[in-house]
Image (spheres, rainbow, N blue to C red):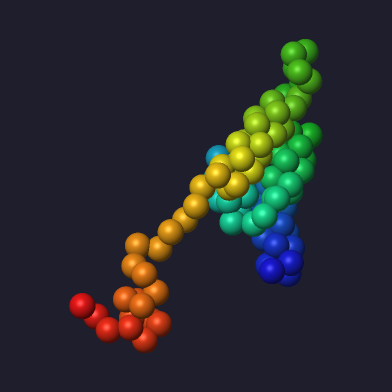
Amino acid sequence: MILTRILYDLLILIAIFLLPWWLIIATCLLLAFYFEFYFEFVLFSLIFDLIYAPISLFLGVYYLTIVTLLFFVVVEFLKRRVILIDSKPPHQNLWCGGKDR
């Protein structure tokens, strides 16, 4: 699991330089749901802001990082509250050796 996380981190780091911002954010958001406590989401948005964001007097250049922090808090809250349930019980699942009804 840690090796896949490191691999995804390297791919996102490379993608910061090659892909559009909205695709990177969408991918990081999906990875935040997939991995537990995906703090790299905030780190990647900080890197993205430091490289591409224009200089501003209001809140500096950290607009994406602030939004990402809010997303991070919401995603972590939702992951603790949402329960995913399979639609079929295990005894009816064909992959578990059950019979099709």
